[in-house]
Image 1 (cartoon, helix red, strand yellow):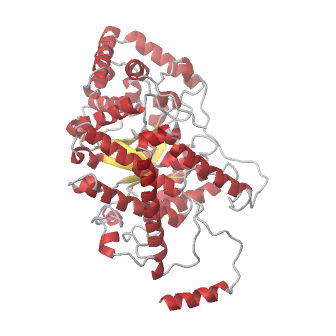
Image 2: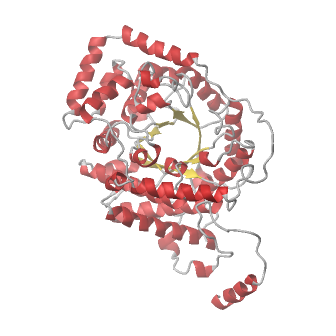
Image 3: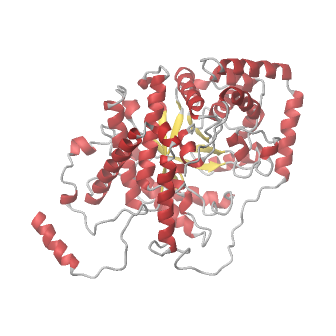
Length: 545
């Protein structure tokens, strides 16, 4: 075979190639052909195995989409809870099978809508949620024991999750029946997204408190969605997304064990959230490598015994950073290819971006097209008919191995720096991502990398898309509702619950029960955050030159 390959290679080199370079989205060089020589060390049972069996390279379920299709989610939220509730009902009526909540920036940063720092941002990039009152409105007439809900919240995750639990309680639904996910991944905020409130140590405490509370009270809930998505959106390569995300995951496992939890008590409810960019095969290889790496480390390093503890289950969102304002209809095609890569890579849940998201929050029509993209993928293309159909491809297996080797090299570098928290303080992750983003942008500017409609195949045309616009009155009405709530509730009871929360924060108590008590009294998110700031302080990023 080697002689045959050498003969072919010599013959190939005599042929003229079109202009390259032949690289992935992450600037990794690609060979013209992959053959057995590229994967000489592969042992089927050890490296691939069967779906639903260790090391899970081929998927976490034995029957994958032959048993159940992935959950089709659309990330949605804008203006007030009332408007977002109407959008959720529309999406559910169109065949969506799970909800995914986008919060506005004041909510993400822990400010009430009547706070001066919220001015100009209320309801703009997500829904404004200030109190239990808003959470009840957000899910009005949506039975929370019948729908799985994902909430993209990190620094205030404990508070918004508690609101959801109490909103379900108000519907008569006990917490043990709830299913869904909170993102709750603060480490990637320090690395990439920058939406933090508290310093790392108390933030990790809140996360492990959630682990413990969910184990005993909300056992079906995914307590964290360890997110590579935002790392990739910040400019990371596929390999950096993979390595940094799994490194964060291992840091959460170590935090849980340090807090006194058995790894098998919380690891089954850890989930992941990955980006799906445009390089079809690179993305598929990334997902396959992720499952194999996670399973091996959880079993061999952390001693997990339960099968559920070593399964890497993940949600995928197509790449927002790949969308273009130029010729926005092209984004429909980009999203379709990215969605197919996620499915062929074995995702459990998928969000497809809308064509207009680079310009504004998605319109109802654009959201419907994005959802139909998933439905056509599921029911018309045939990709869900067989499990991991690309397994055994010399190219895919070589890329998968390459991803795994590169991730392990990054783990060694992170360990040398003293672990994830130390690497964050030294700006290691931030610098790696910045360098990758700079290289990618230079490739676009030099036309080494072609982006259709941006640096090649350009047209001069007016964009004729109806964009979703947020009425400025939304902000004033939301702030007014917060003020009215604060005036009408039992404020003595609110102050007593906040005082009890502060006392617990100064101890080693689990904080979730005290947060829930404050939520039941209609304390606002901003009030709860303010109390915790008094004890925990606020995070300030260390600038490194």
